[in-house]
Length: 78
Image (tube, rainbow, N blue to C red; front, side):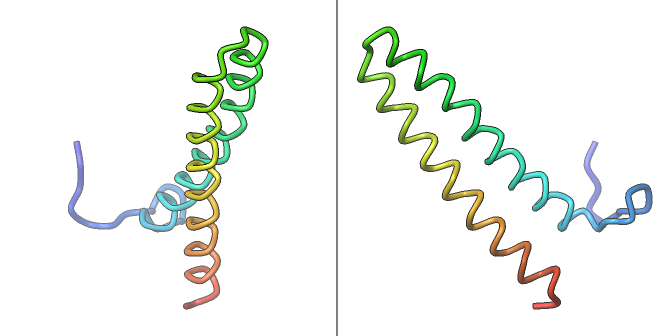
C-alpha cells in the first residue's frame, strides 16, 4: 500500500526526509555487515568473494556519504 502524498503525521518527519535517513542508516549498516563477510571470506582464503564484498562495502560507504550530504543540506534548509 503506497501513498501519493507525503505524510509524516505519526513521526513528525516528512517521508522524503525519513526515507533519506533510512537510506543512510541502511548503507552504513550494510557496510558494517559486509566487514564480517569480508573477514569470513579471508579466513576461508576466498579472495574472489572477499574482493566482491570489499567492492560492495565501498559502494555502501559511497551511498552513505552521498546520502549524508543530501540530508545535511536539506536539514540546513538548502
